[in-house]
Length: 446
Image (spheres, rainbow, N blue to C red):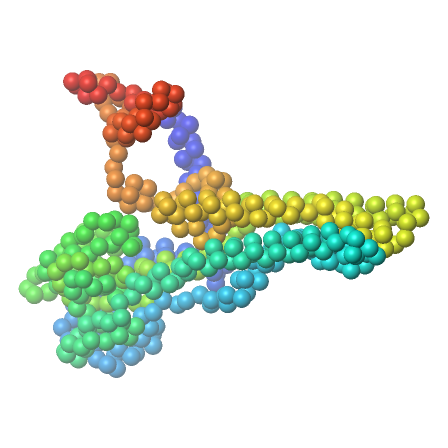
């Protein structure tokens, strides 16, 4: 049973390595560069340096901080402490995009054909079906487009979420004096003071920490507060020599996380787009948008339906001409055949179905930014994620137990099972459908 799982895992990991390699050697100005910058986090070693070496590395003073001139020079070199926002697409462009999808264009085309057919037909007063059908087609397309636009625009942009991590002000030491400055003016090398209840305004290596705790949930998903520890000898911080991985270091506070208890002082090592959060934000901005399986299928379907409709319309038009009917009558008849092959209700049905699914997912705390991604989730074969706080929600569940040398399947929670039984209101048919635990709750050993 284990061997097939190992083979599948090896195949999946090799595929991921290949994708990672392709991304790295790909577009140097896009995804490849962003991935390379993120991978470089592994080489950060500022947390391992002692206080003197770190101050020399950052060209600052660990007691007096930067001078104003040094701060300006550092900002010119490393950039301001802000996250670069992706160029926003105007709302009207998004609205036009929703109105001019390939499916919407087909319905618009069908509606205008109805109006054209009504305009050229001779018996307008007797037969107004083309007029009504054209109005219905255009109205359905417009309303569905408005609904899709509302659904897409109601989800806040990713960069707006990241901007919420930036505190407006920060306390720094410059020229030996404590001052409050705007967080966007923080520079690499600044000596910064961190207090309980405030967000960390940049990536910081701590020089002192008094009962200081941080919450990295916004970065790692770990909900527990982490105690920050700084080893000091002769009044100088020694650095964390044990952890070369900066995420495991005890003397680091990351931009966007929160100081929940205590206080501390530290030197800023990264600002803005160079911080951990900044690099993650950069990945989200340059991530390539790939056509969803649903959109690919719909596009193929529309092309097929469109080709069939046009071929049938043109064919019957020439048949009518061959049998001696006048051109106006033949054209109206051909337009009717083309419009009849257009699935008017499909766009509305697909949109409403996806919207209802997105609404149900929202109740499970899943934000759907693109309706078509709801269907894509069903085509997902591999999800790359950390475990703690993401897949488990910090709730560990026992799946198997070994008692008296015998394995016991414990995947069905007994309390949940009893609640489901109670919810059936003694309906035997419903109770039979509920999976039963594979363990005996009355067993003394269990």
